[in-house]
Image (cartoon, rainbow, N blue to C red; front, side):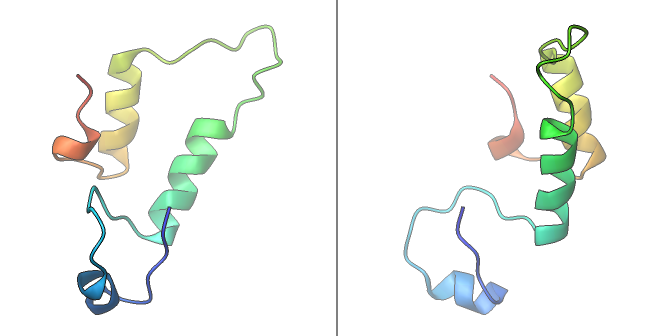
Length: 68
């Protein structure tokens, strides 16, 4: 993950561009994705449909977020 000060700063960077999201959205994604203790017996892997719903709930759409 790379952090940028602004869209202009991002545009000046010449690296490959996948998807961009705000720190707030990244934090919400991290909380949702890693917020469950995987050591608990009831933990289970998310289904692709659950992942799609999570991404959609955070506004993460487009080719980068599409599961194949």
